[in-house]
Image 1 (cartoon, rainbow, N blue to C red):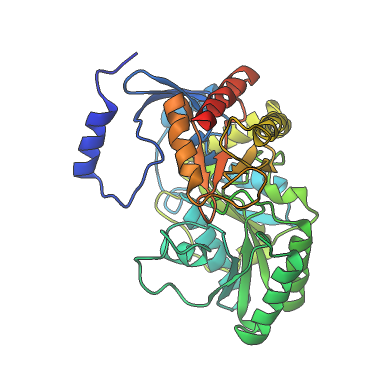
Image 2: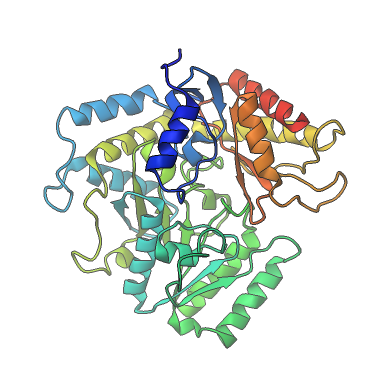
Length: 426
């Protein structure tokens, strides 16, 4: 049902009131959402393959999330954990400590955004090691605050206008586009010889699957090589699970597809089920390196968000969403494989990613691996016109990424894929 408002009128109001620095992937304005469906202010129904950028893995307005938040809201909405702490924060920390792939006892702390999680992971690593250096990877994305932007391995639009980035941040090449794992590790070793002594490096941070970088899976060989070097040199390994976490890849944490265990894990997005919540989970002795007052934030670990987070973990377990993610991924990958062979669609490559974190590249021509720079944005624009939201990513803007809620039905999933196929014909 239409609200009587229009997308165009809201766009005009936005242009007058909101700076252009915050972009939006679509020109529709949301009115309501449920499960894997969204309705705009004009009453148009749209299948959601974005999930708020992998936030509502349990679907929009899951009844257990809404019930948990409403129950908490009936008691109190905010006290500040640093003023009058509360049980839900402690319980959520206990749950994550038991679930996280960390060697030995673990502890958790909560914040609000993914960038806060990655930055605080670095703060903790620096405090624990007494070092300042950080190594990240080309194509990686770790947030838009200043240190997070410095760690992000893409210049435009994350660094271009913002002057000098924080120092002691270095980038190793990610194994993609002709770069092998051996190349990446060899370059890292050369960096230790030419750019930064390993005794100055506090942490290496890496996404188990690059998100903004194009849904590129990190080979286990690279993770093992990083773990070996971190252990040898006393460097801490940070897994940035902001986008890969909480059943999205078919495991609770993306790094669980490997045998490697990190020292620290940054989490956000899907943990809060639509409520702002992020955190860092890590080995207890590392987490305790920061003195009281050195970590925190006014809204960090909001009681409403913690209530939602506990419900999210319950839903993932009770509805077997890790298994569901694998099922969704198989359906998507099979459809994309078929599209890659068709001459009546724009040329695309085969699916890559894990679980229900799936992307495919737009190609310059069929039968080649050469990608079309910026090609994904055209597909995304055609898709939303067709009635399904998908997002772009990739260093060159070449990858279409699909992130449907893990609670999506097969019927709605296939409907969305049919709509996306229609967009590929356009």
